[in-house]
Length: 533
Image (cartoon, rainbow, N blue to C red; front, side):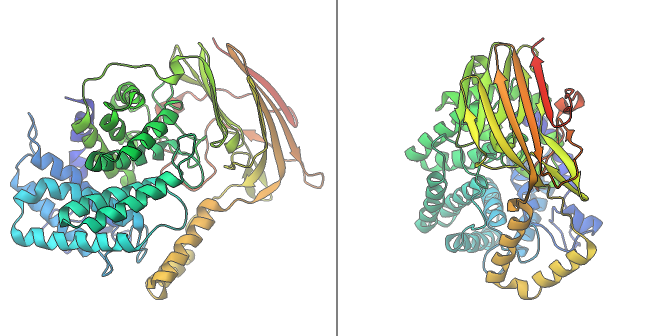
């Protein structure tokens, strides 16, 4: 069985266990098990209904051993799932993701896309009344997406999902205006695309989300054959290829959002049109098989359905491909100053250095295909607050050389905000009363992003780091500076940790089991040379 299909099929019992499958229940068809079964939360998240895409795929796709194909019980549950999704829609056409009355572009876009794909597969099995009812829900969602945008930051994967959803809705409704609005979201993504190729995620590049967004753009391209978008995708994928690691992982703490999951479908879809996409698709199939990158086995409830669905799109698109070299197969020194990243490759190792993340450095051995060095920066406790050199900024002073790079980075307070009962009570009380108003809902969204994501408070400590590359070694020289009035901090160096709020980061990966040893600083300085074995 194909690697994508085998992983997806194995997860079907887990998927069905997430669903309320009991017809008498008031939440019949819901996939938010925390809400309907445990009753630990006070509202049902709409994005869990994305499970219907995978469920419909297995219901409508025959293959040997597929016990779900044409099963009447599965069909009944799918219909119940659609009806429950419809019940979650606000009168204005929007859906919520994280809290009541959020009116989330992400939730509206993602659920409309995945349920739209499911609707196409299922429509022949629906009655005229069921089709008309679901059709109205898509129209309302499309109308809302035509009138609303995302303003709290540029998250290209959200905008790409909105474009793909609108194109799907245009085909369901037979109305061109939805396609025209989809073009707006595509244009917004492309206008923010870096000349280096990457798509913006909160001001920088993030590799897990690059693979996620690539899928929606690739699917949109499949539907529209937009030539301009294809050229944009080729440029993006060429950039991404430099950050595929020999051990089958990508991204992590050197990205703007620290994600390291891998969504394969976009690369499989584009593999016959882009050599770099084919190279990534073939190489990463073994990563999917062994779950080297953060894969389906590691996903929590919030990313489980999107990645499960993605494996099925990847299965549908996969073709016989020859293995092709990736950038880590050839020595080179690749500088991406707009991303604040450097990829240095020799015959012995691939090193990824991130001046934009306070000097995060990762080294992968080419021959053994292992992560052999990982330095995610320093942290310290100052007046009961944790501060760290690992912080995203494209304004860090950097000097790029042929075989060495120097950076100066501020230490900033780590955002360790968590919800308390009183804070939760106040937040919920506000949202279910005056927070229902659209303008106030937008204000709250912007405030949450500013507090949890964008807030960056520097302290009077800096790290000066110089990294020098040779054929078989890498030398790190650090100088830690702190204010004279400050009590001398105790600095800790760690191979893996995260300093930002990002629910989609910190998934377990097998390379964590053997963390490389890090030489601690001596006083306020450190010089360490890693040598290939």
